[in-house]
Image 1 (cartoon, rainbow, N blue to C red):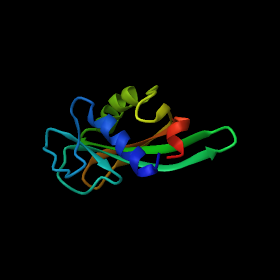
Image 2 (image 1 turned 45 degrees about the vertical axis):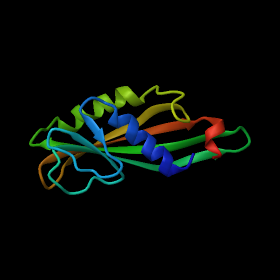
Image 3 (image 1 turned 120 degrees about the horizontal axis):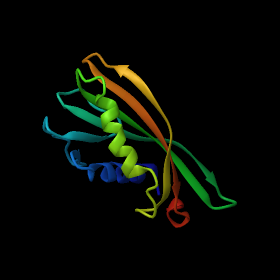
Length: 140
């Protein structure tokens, strides 16, 4: 599985969380939705948002093990100190332990880090996950 396909799959899985929305063909999100974005979260009036990026990995061709790392950036509602944390928890619940979905063998969170408030007063944090790909999907 290539990195673009994996990133879109992660966006779709997150988009299935109640209140989160993933629109691959045009991210016109309402203020009541948590927009899921491929890559960076654009500047805008979105209430809250999540950016998804695959950023590294390993390929063990001897043992046919293939892994990737992904980072999720959460941006909470303006003025809420717990905004990013509140967004990260449902994502953690849906991703951790995810198995045998679209070429993913397993996912676990390896770290998270509060990033503080951005210039608009929205708290941000990043969560990093390690993903093991199914052997049959890794070489595609």
